[in-house]
Length: 369
Image (tube, rainbow, N blue to C red):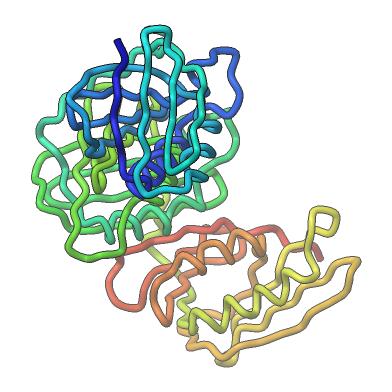
């Protein structure tokens, strides 16, 4: 006896596109290269899962049947996307032969039994942390640059969610820089967990810029789930002791500089033209006489540049890794920033001119000579 269901092409194409981001591109287990389909009456559930990250969504379809199968993600996506009609019908027989029809086109491919799909983690969807999607998206995007890409310390390849007393800090650190974003939320309890950056990047891609949409975050002992616009992204939490980031934030400074964010970004981008993997050198920044002077010298050539700056305190000269400083400044969402320094060998703090909804720390680089 066959099972039949019909979906709108627009709905299922979008679902496949997003769910497939959690599918293994290559695996010794064929089921992991597929999307699991679970049909219950008029609701079709689609799941991609690579044993690290999973994405699930639900779409409406025309059917009264029940079935679970696995379809190769790439083939399923390409066939569905290229169908000539706005409605696509799928029909599965007892031998897992699948017929896909739309307009005059008809495909026949083989499915895989759902019993070969790995068990998904069970996550209790209770006591959610609710946060505005636009806010969460900006918090992730403004901090993820500082996540470590070195697997030697797995805990640092994720971002810390530090929630307490109606406040949330999202924190990333890689040993050379630290990024913190803070927001007020309506959640008074305490939660402290670290989410892999890969999962956060996928979540960010689904978060909307509409200011009235909310995201619910469910956290268990070992897993976290983000419920976003009908999609559920789940992943295993990173284990270990996260760096005590609050102790790394400088509380005193000898020099405070206020500069226009776009001016310093453009200046550092000009430095980038002289830097690459073979030609590395610190960018020398001198702060004096109401100006920030920048010098960059490599085998390619030399740049001398300057921008106006409001300087309070001691004049100073500091070396920076151009990319690290540029990443932090690009993450700033204000027209001007404060740069606070305590000398050439001390951590540099970058904050907004008003408030501290972001705090970016960059370690300086030793200057020769």
